[in-house]
Length: 293
Image 1 (cartoon, rainbow, N blue to C red):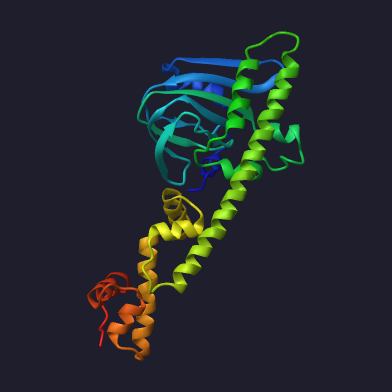
Image 2: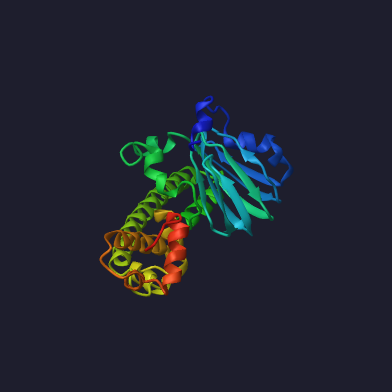
């Protein structure tokens, strides 16, 4: 099921704020703000643990935890994703997207919403396709201090009614749009950089299968911390670094065995296996039972 599969069942017609005030979320204390000069809507809600589903609304939804430190799972329609959500972990949801949540602890959340197409009206060149422009931010938590400042500023201005409020709101909305665009560009650049670095690691592994390849060494080649390297490798390659190395060693061993040009013990050594027994175990595990002679 794709991210927008739910939208294909029927065009969403309710605003997110309307849904929030009339759904199961209404049990949680919440303060809503809007302003006749702005098409943005904001609210702060004190959530308790829940497993609710957000509708596919007409709005973009940007959620910023003001207080949170609990395990969270969410599903955009393409599988559950889980990690602790803490203060400052943004989540951006495009219009027409249903999201299921499982929140394990209390959370104070600032939510800003605006209708689809509003950013295009603001700048039809930069936001000719709103979702394409902001796609690097969709589907995962992200932090950004500039964006957080913009959200807090917009929330404060939504409460003001003085003569200057229109100017400040226009400035706050422009700041928010610019912050989103800049944050998306940085994530896109970072993603491209990490793809290049993981490809460099894959090439290094291929050239050094006979050596002792440690996670520390490989993460250093990628220029990432151990945690981020392991996560990025898994995301791009589909298996852990250890599993990938074992698969490549096994593949190389099988090719050398079929060539019948080297003693079996030499093949095990050249392919980086600690022993002949270890190589045989890996061949059984990754390639099925094979007769070795």
